[in-house]
Image 1: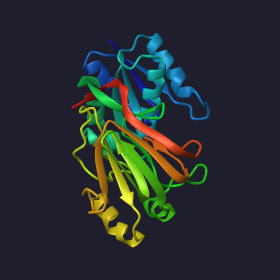
Image 2: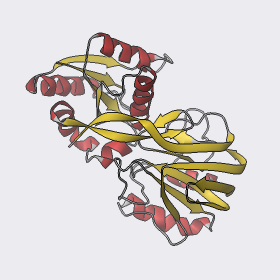
Image 3: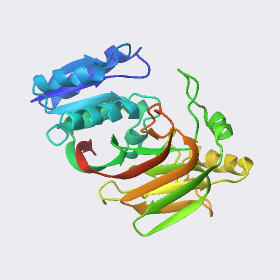
Image 4: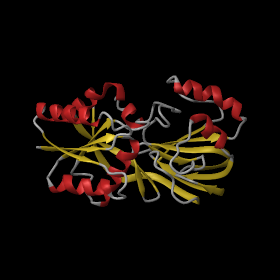
Amino acid sequence: MKIFFLLNPSRVKNRWDWREMAARSAKRYGWTPRFGEVDRTLPHSTERLLDQALEEDCSRIVVVGGDGSLHRVINALAQKKKLKSVELATVPAGTCNDFARFIGLRRRRIENAFRLACSGKAQSIDLGMMESEIFINNAGFGRRPAASGKRWRSLQALRAFRPTNVRARWDKGSIEGLFYMVLVCNAPFFSGGLHFSKNVNMRDGLLDVFLMPAMPKWRLLPLLALGRLGRPTRFKRLVALRVPRLDVEVDSDVWPQADGEPPSNPVRRISFAVSPEKAMIVTP
């Protein structure tokens, strides 16, 4: 059996140590390891590495990176119609690692993540869709894109929020109002551990939707601080839904994102739904 480690860490100084850990764990559990490192200067580097893994008949791919790396791998495998036949594992080596957090993995215990990637069993889980783009963790809109090459800090992101008039429809209802954010969750965490609820189920055929209403921004600061301490960011006016599909129209441009990937062009209409595709993900 062959296992492919796709390396795309946010910090590269430990990559050789991680390769050794990966090889050691793979051999311990009967895998033949193969490696590929993403070249961020090449636009299709991830896709080429996946072609390499598939050509070598690797039945499990371990994404050593963050949510964005996992997002790109899942979308590429879906395009190649290989999601059902390839198992996926993740090792938290990115910036936020929110999906890894959800399944109990931490960057400071990276060796445990490699061990699980090689020894765990894969289970079929739901995926979401934002238009035609698949996401595993969450998708939505609310903040404008940061300057090229930069990432928003939490306080900067809060300052950048502007209320948008949103009309949202789902199978059993609709709502209209001014909202700062629309977040559609397949897994609970975003922005490095913030969450509105931990009771998100990736196997129920539904998406958890949260609409953050416009309010004085100073009221949001303590809520976000509690989120950083591990408590859900919940408040009375937060709109929470659990639906298979959500169609949204807005009165001004928004920049939707999926799994923390950079936003594409601004839009004023967008649909979110449970994907007909599923992924085989290694979990504890």
